[in-house]
Image (cartoon, rainbow, N blue to C red; front, top):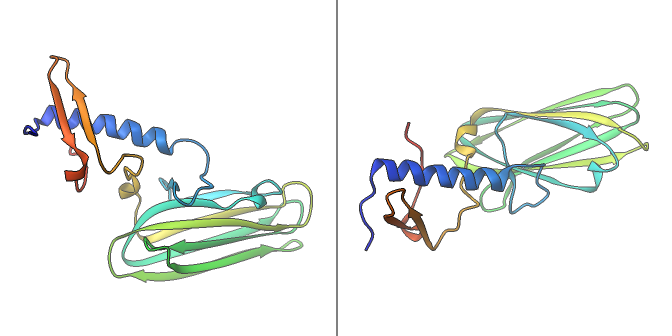
Length: 189
């Protein structure tokens, strides 16, 4: 039988869960749609080069309800380049996409807006595109603004959805939490 949880136990469990989530999401940009990098900043920037053009990069963030604005900038560095983004809802339905190209000495900015009727977890896919050159070709910056909640992006996707979280306390006692019975885990200061 599960025992009632004390405030100290809840804080301890949350610390463990936060550590696991941090380890699962730390590191480089994700190229795995099923394990996207959580956005912690409203801006993503980088170079479009021959290495990045071989991959798609995936990010997750929470947005809505309300208007979300996506601003995409690209500029030429050594040769012409392009980049594309697409945003999907939790059912993998494409909500919005656009691309930008930098030719010659040009820069390009694209701004798109969309409205969400409720708060949802979104997946952002960034695809560095064609390059015409061998070195760094272009620099991009994608900014997300509006009804975006990056603090909620700290999801616990790395945690299993079933099983027992077993915690051994300093006094030797053991507490167990059935993960099937959890709906949401939050930190209360």
